[in-house]
Length: 531
Image (cartoon, rainbow, N blue to C red; front, side, top):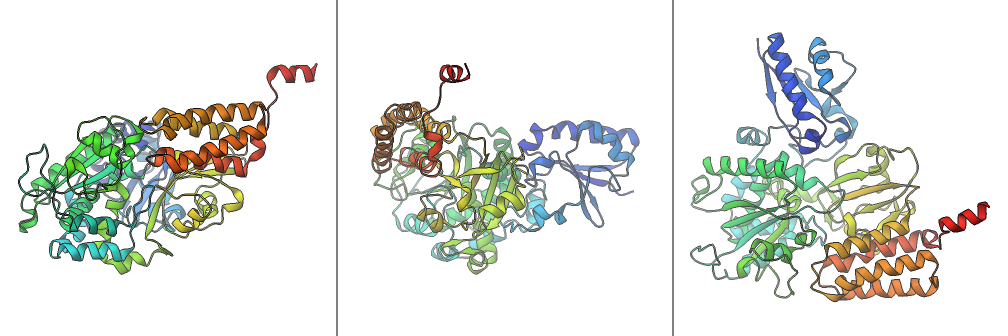
């Protein structure tokens, strides 16, 4: 009898909820019953409320069961692995949460074994690189430029312009690596430190060949022969998957001195960060890669001209580079078809915080927050009304309910002093204290600052003090004016986005929720009132 294929995710979110134990239990139960199974450790589909999500391959499609606990395994086998069971979700691809998404970057999420090169190739992997190998560098850059792809980090800078700058820059003097000839680099910023974000982690753990392919294409496009993935230290499963995939790519000729017999070279390795949030800023990241303390560099010169070891360097984040293969495979026009205005393609949105159905939603730009929060997120987990959401991580603005119908679009958000950032959305219900959230933003900035510039280093600490005085009712008119002036100084005078954007959540909280900053009654005052 043909073995039954059973899928259990190896994603760290699923593992944290017991996926490894469920996989062991499934293997043990199959052995006990004498049933032949093919146990595949796939990646997560991004529906975290269903993890561990166990899937069983059938002639009709893959049937899902979830969330599965070890105690459920025996009954799954008793039901025939594909028949009626209380945890049966039906055909996974038909679930509304997945069916209505536009998954380009996450097309393989949950489908394949992440570290199987054969699986990757069977699901359109390396088609983009094959096309790129037959193209001139300028043509690759032109395709990325025409697609409208913008950096999927905070700045949303057009990727093609950055690549064109590096392509046109003369190679730098080789650094400590001892390489011969003019050198350029591709650096992937995988130091995903923003709260409520996990798309980079899901790519590294769940589709590492996609990132490898995207970086290799970038190398061909600009003339870089070496790349580094700067990965946050909290992602050990991502490190393991990436290194395993890189080894397979070398062994199969997709990396190295002669990629698929083309005579073109690209070498790649993973470097682990040490947990500093500031190293998510591109110049601090370069300092860290060079073995120095992670501190912001003055710009100019830009990294595209003088980056890693003084050489021209492309720095993009994971989702940006992972978006490149589909562009080179299906063409710039295909990618441009998705999105609105100057925001082209799709964005993997990450729903987190007080939300009923937390998970990854990949949609074309133009979707509204209301659609994301209610159609996909299902409202709050607490069942209370959503009061605000923070979009773009800890430096993103707090968006009130009155703006939930705004289309997800870089320019539309910028007009209202909001930002899309990395696509992380953190949900808060009506019990949130926005003055506390504003203070946290300043505290976060003070804690994570590299200390190089005064507006960030000192301004964030003063910001906490001013908010405390404002809430305490100590000359509130004066304190609010001082807080706004302080935010202006940080916005205009900080060296990087940490100090320059920390005021966004503060000012948005102050503007949209002013009542939360009114003087509070102390416990002693309340006791006197009650007496």
